Length: 429
DNA sequence: TCTGGGGTCCTAGGACCC
DNA sequence: TCTGGGGTCCTAGGACCC
Image (cartoon, rainbow, N blue to C red; front, side, top):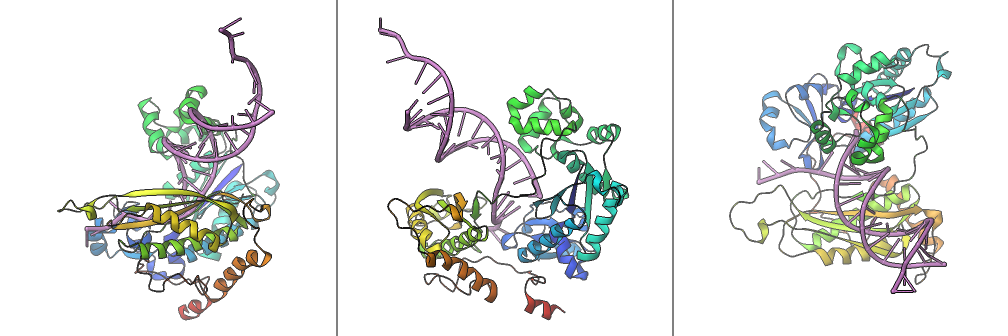
């Protein structure tokens, strides 16, 4: 049996955990630059605020119902997530952190003596997370991960279940799948849902009974796994030993549209420094660097059809002569890639970075035409990370970075980093 | 006026190897 | 005249996830 434990409205719940005034009232968390809704409390959902809505579209609702706004505070959410995940080891040995607000657990018979029923185990997890972290969770139990996802969603949609849904026998599974919309299934996105519906498959039970080879042709082996999982045969195992990331990307939008190369280069430098930090955090090095640049696709500038109202986007990938996690190694390649795609005259919204070809740090090989880094060079990055952890982000940065940061994002409703910044914690209490 | 950010997996096809 | 069989590696593109 698997369980899926999921924090309800994660970001909003984290904010509420430290700010009781947000309880019982509509709250939304906003994405970068406070533009876009990325989490909603139940009260906000009832007002009809949709996921992903732009703030200007719901400004009337915000004013009428005094909806509380929170800028996204990932220092807080990430730390609460780590606490939530580590708490799960108090109950079971096999834990797979799946996303910032979800964990899969393997719940086998060995826990029978401690928790005589899945229901009892679920209640115990729910109560403990609430007591220790003040976060509300829902839990679904079932024989496969996909069915546990189904059970979790049922727990969430039916308040009378009080956050717990157990699917064990076939009759329960049949009923659940019959009522489960195809597009809500884990692994069925917009396009597959459309195709399945066109072929007469509208609920999960119909998909479970579908012909395997026909599914494979359209939905590849992943679709096949999904059907097996619905039939109760595990095709996705618990991955409790997460591999390092194979792609690392940093691409926040600017706080306003930026036309000039100087400011964009400055942003690129800062983003690249973040990428290297992420690499070092998982003890990796990378060799492939993609830089992309684009204007705001949603902007419909009325009036003069001159350059400033047209769209532009471009990208360039470069391969370094060796793997690295050091900003100084990446920077010249990043800057020349940027210069090769930059075109004068457009108002840009974002410069983004993607790193690929990522390998463990101790797999480092000297390039044929480049010297291997010295031990001091290898250590430098980790030393900078240590200083920035201790004295605050950007305590140490490269000299070419500017201090004014004209491009930086806007966050007008940011809460404190309650759990990770001791000074702020003292102020808060 | 204003619309997020960061990932994974799979497949096909091209270039190359012996 | 007749031109095999079995691989690897890389990339782009498409689908999905939270």
